[in-house]
Image 1 (cartoon, rainbow, N blue to C red):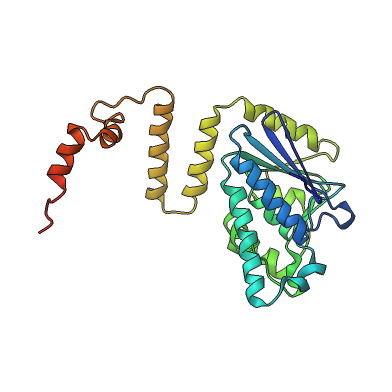
Image 2 (image 1 turned 60 degrees about the vertical axis):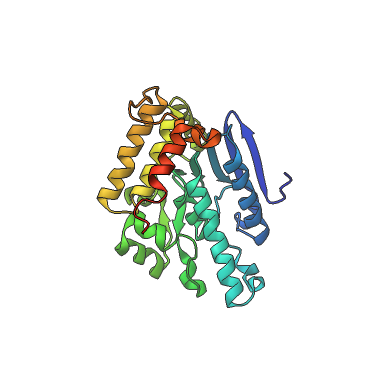
Length: 277
């Protein structure tokens, strides 16, 4: 697929997406946003890829939506449609069955910060900066700046970030559990490779399950979250070879439906009209 405003590469089970508008600090034009959606979909569809790294060209990650284009978004309903489109993009990124890494240099503000919040890991340089300055443009965030941010750093700090609009250091992002790691300015790529080396060594099915149950569990009550943990433990046992359960069908129900054998007929005869009066 041909991209004009981002660079897409695949190497050794890793997809690399580079936002490529360095002349405007990789601001998300409507075109770049569309291309990012397409790139994420490529990653989603792949069964060969296991990891995704998102970075910015030049010395910045991303400064969010291109404000100069917002007049083109249309009326209030058009704006809502575009915001929901961006929300879906962030949700798709967060829901990938691949492990995702945001490699942040320079500014990650507004939509750029929202991208990092949808990733599993965030590694940043010492000079990296972050914030949600939308308030001073007279707009509000649309795809994570209030929602994911509050879940990651708490309501009190999310209000501070959004209502004041200050720009903060990478170290504070780590201290506030927003990002994972700060590295020297010339060590970003090396640290990403170090993390990928560790992740490649893991049971990939285990990584997929862990990501899924953590993402789902954090949004629900404790007992429901524990249900995900229990089912994941069972699935882990099954895919590790301990799948035979003595009183399970082991596929006989599905095969019986296909062939309409005695098992299927007996079950349907007993159940079809039970308590239907």
